[in-house]
Amino acid sequence: MTYYIINSAGRSSYIATLCGSLVTAVFLFWLIQIANKMSGLSLIQILYNTYGKIVSTGLILLYSLFHIVTASFILRLSLTLFVKTILLPHFPLWLIALLPILIIGAFLYMDNFSIFSQWNLILIVVTLLAYFGGMIIGVVTKFDFDNLKPVFHVKLYDFAYGAFLMTSVTSETVIKAFSIIGMIKSKKSTYRGYYIGCILFIPLMSLSLFFALSIMGLGVAKNSIFSVIDLAQEIGAETYIQGFEIFHLIPFLSLIYINVGYKSYCSLLGITTLSKNKKLKKIFVLVICGSIYTLTLLMPSFNKAMVYLNYIVNYITIPLCLFFLILATIAVVIQKRRKKKSS
Image 1 (tube, one colour):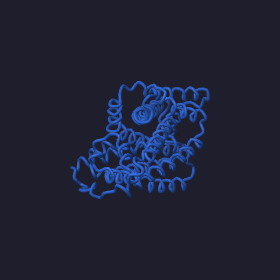
Image 2 (cartoon, one colour):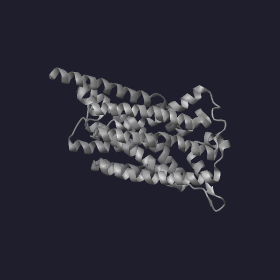
Image 3 (cartoon, one colour):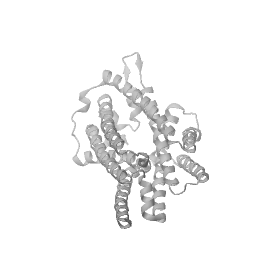
Image 4 (tube, helix red, strand yellow):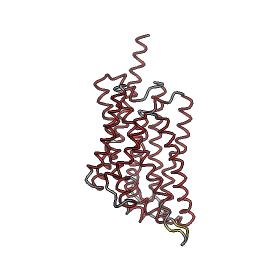
């Protein structure tokens, strides 16, 4: 979605990104407040305990379906086509898509979130080191302040739309946290983790776009949907080493795997709220992974997938996030009243 953000907000897209991330931080703080009121429960469990089996089943299936559909779009757009076009052009699409699905399916089958989280933490550290390692080289060799001037050259509406897009993209982090937040037991560690996360998370995307624009210039960044490739090709060390693709391809592919993996795990946590049967859990894993894989292969083209994902980002993500947060807030109030009546 960076392509659309840059096309809308232009050189001020890194400022729009900062604004969007701040709004997402507010959503995340809202979620933590709900979790602290209902300690030990995820937002999905809060809904299940409050609204009854029929209503909550519909809500949980909607939540899981959202993750399955968006995971298939991300896999089709970013991993399969990107890898097939740039790295492995002679490999069939079904084979390229199968490997990450099998790895993710293995994690879901083991049902050990701590292992999954630890592995992803290692990937994130390696990803950030590789990405910002490449960025540092790019800043030293290609950084140009003229690429960032003038900053506010777009209409206020276009800037606001860019910030809205970033809010929508990053608010998926909050949606994914709906099913995981109940694992946090300590109120103190919750707030500490929130503040540390915001300090690191809020400026990260903005800083990344700031450097990317200063290295590539608006013309390149605005006209290429594969800006990450153009950015990698722009970075070099004089005539000795040209194209630092490895500094961007590894982070790009790692983050895609992490994103699809978390979506699959959140979908499983949502569905297993409805049933604790271990035999059914294995079936759920097969259904989730099979659905993501099938939808990925059924996607007719890159352009179609981009249009569908853009529609979800524009019209579904933020309303869905707010919808669940509001329902959970009402559920907390209802549960408090029930406790007062019972006491």
